[in-house]
Image 1: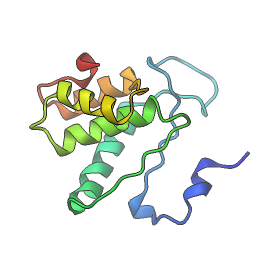
Image 2 (image 1 turned 180 degrees about the vertical axis):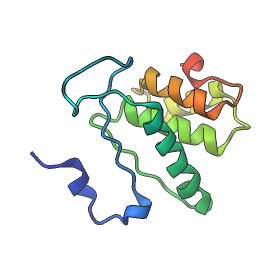
Image 3 (image 1 turned 30 degrees about the horizontal axis):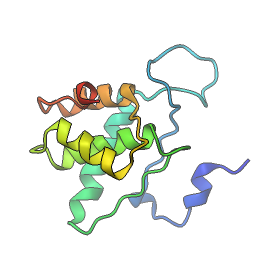
Image 4 (image 1 turned 135 degrees about the vertical axis):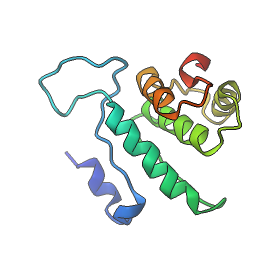
Length: 128
């Protein structure tokens, strides 16, 4: 099996972030370290990365990848979008995401953690 991070080895390490999280919606105890839900620390790393990376100008593009492009990646995109544009209400972000990616089903656990960390007064978790 190919290590997912090996597929992106050509991207500079300061321009990439790898979060090995599983697509679970609630934290639970599991023996397999490869299958773990996102933690608050993971989402904190995502938001810190976004604050640094997306601060480089309007032409910045971001590639977010997960296994199916439906849950983890769309939740991550929503959080980064909300962080970059706190003036946009969560409902508007969800509608925009649905236009871009109609099959999106953002991971509720990731959104809940992100809402806590962003603390913007609007909830992506509630808007989904």
